[in-house]
Image (cartoon, helix red, strand yellow):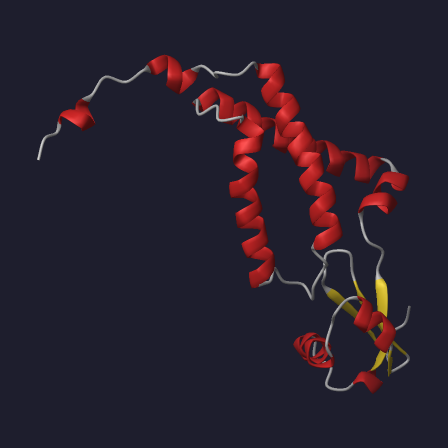
Length: 171
């Protein structure tokens, strides 16, 4: 077995200099970021506080598929760094806007949704979030609640967690 293929000269220009313009990489990364943001916002629903297997699979596959669209087959280290930096910049910018501009937060984040009111299950809301009775009960038990009658209100929050107000709590 020959080691010559492994010892071949390295084309340093291909490694460190993008084959596409920096502006094109930024535009591609921005366009893909916003397209994926909107699509994932429409397709992925929040779940009961966890990232499900199907969600993880979607994220991995989307990352793989979107990679080529972001870099336009520019395999340089700098090109990849520019693309990743652009995506991280947009992520930070959107988080910053959500924090400082309330209407942006209302537009991007889903509002909390009541699942239990005065011990009564709100089945229509559970159905809207695709939360089964057993999933809801699991979340309640994890918070020390054994029966819905002990709950004044329970909400699925924007991040998918379920918050519970017990009947004996004030608020």
